[in-house]
Length: 212
Image 1 (cartoon, rainbow, N blue to C red):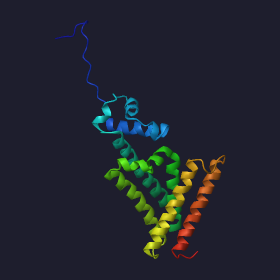
Image 2 (image 1 turned 45 degrees about the vertical axis):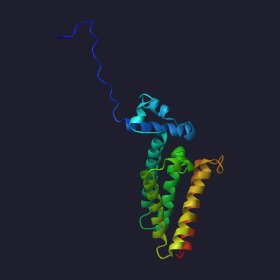
Image 3 (image 1 turned 180 degrees about the vertical axis):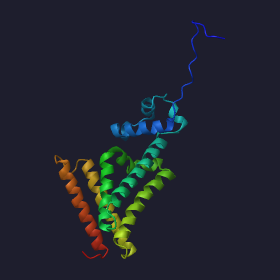
Image 4 (image 1 turned 30 degrees about the vertical axis):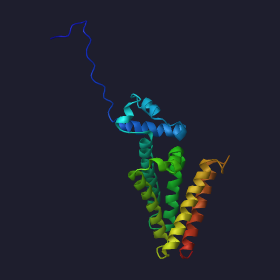
């Protein structure tokens, strides 16, 4: 029957689309803006333009959403390290430096996500996927150490791997926390970072018995 002028057409049911992905992206932006202390599922839902109860369809709790965000963060970190490392071609020392550059660049570009990934509170929401993603980053780092000092004993590789990781992570963390580099230009800080990475790679090579 034709619709009369006084009849109100029925609205089609609202369909958000990929709600899960929208919540993850909204959560990522919220995390960078407010940090972990200001992160709530309600605000994620508001930014994704859904009801505050909608996230429960995909994330049983705030911890589950944070775990997914951290998991993706480790995936991006690993990709950044691998991308910069590939520029080194067959030079193992340059690969170590390159992976360090990728590590620092990711951290500088995603400071709150970086803090989340290495926050002790992640213990409360660690998932198998998050553990696997973190392990992949560690394995990529260790593979660069093994390529740099292939003939060194296992204990030397482990020790230099710890040293190299601590050097890269420590420098960028101190920088993000404004404990170093206050008032320095980006160019100066980049130069400092590269110098530290070069020193780190040289120390690793020497510890592994590789001649200069």
